[in-house]
Length: 179
Image (cartoon, rainbow, N blue to C red):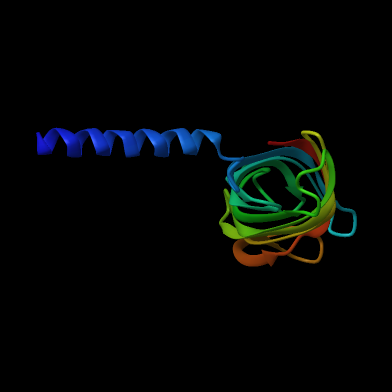
């Protein structure tokens, strides 16, 4: 009899806890997804690319932290491959996160994988979210190593290669969705 009372009491306590958990307000920690497509360009560096990225992570009130992965097509004239894959940590802060229209600040830092080598990928953007639509603009910086062929002053190939570090930077414009 004593065991039955203990089991019945435990079941009642657990059921009250489950009922209370269902009646609580929204959780402060949520899943977050930011998917954006856009252009990166720098006329002075002769660099232009189209990039699509997605960030998956957690949102705690107005703070969104996650891991970003993307694919980019394009680059500078020194690049032998025009496809690159950025993998980075992303932090985005929404100023009025519970409103339908809110401005944000975004920071991304990580690596970029190109055919030639691995490099650095970073961006600092600002923009807004209107309902689920997202717009961002700012600056980007990449750094990676490429292999260059040796030429003389007349443009004739002299044989051999050398490594050169390329640091494209410029303006970034992206449109997308933030959930």
